[in-house]
Image (tube, rainbow, N blue to C red; front, side, top):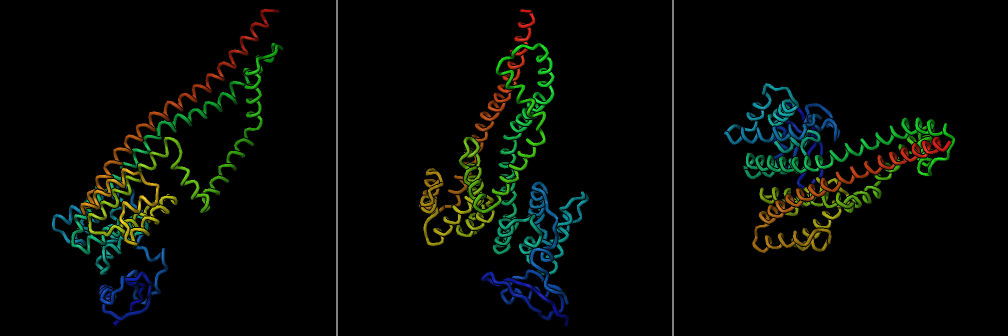
Length: 406
């Protein structure tokens, strides 16, 4: 009987490793699960794979659209009555060439080896985050995997829609602003120097605004490389400072206070947080575990700290509405909605109502952002062009007047 080296986690989260005897690798997985261990890796006559490298069955990362397609197709196949391995085989054998086939093949192989589906997803690199894997684990435990995947599809569609709306609202202003910078460079580098040569031949004193424009143009034309170097160095220093823990915490907090942009980021966070918690609680995950999962899925360090405080208070028996009130960052209307849900005993529905409310608010905030930023950038560009045009015309008229006087 061959020996299998293994690495596994116990119910308390500890990691253990060793060697067991079994007829096949699948039997080795069953033995470990019977002992109350969750296998991470099992290999015949092999060293235990190092964490983060060989422990992952694949490094292929699916895009958002591919992840949504995989989840939706798998849910439909399971609802049609196929077993998990058969459903993964159907996806693996699809004609279109994409990373979805590769991931499905690796997942199917792990499932055939006796590994649970949720654990197989965890071994797929960064494609499936902790939230996705824990939802699947809850579906496996409750025998409702197709329903869980359907809810996950709805969640993925919502989050992707939120992301696209924020990006689209900033796309046009970014293009206009970049065009303004290019236009400024062309004016100061090419057009103004030619004008200064022409006006200098008249020998007449030019208006102050024209002299300032020519001086700025001359400086930019001579020291453009130094300007680029200084700007690049400053950008690198700012980036390095932001990447430090204190700098990251300050920047993540400051982003939420930026006029116009800050309210959009806040509304996006509320909508994502509430939708996530609603999905988790509706599928049998406890509120405390749901908050901890949302904590792991939140990239903003400042908001992570707030959620950590909320989780600590909920873990001590405080209601969610009361915990949010004590933290002091969340809006009163959110606490009112959640308070009603807690009184009626239907916190999942309250979370869903609140998520819909802040989804509408996010849409409104994005509309305000688009309405304000676009005219502001256009006005800035027009102001710059107007100043340059006035300076040039004033210099030309002054020179023409001097020639006529002669």
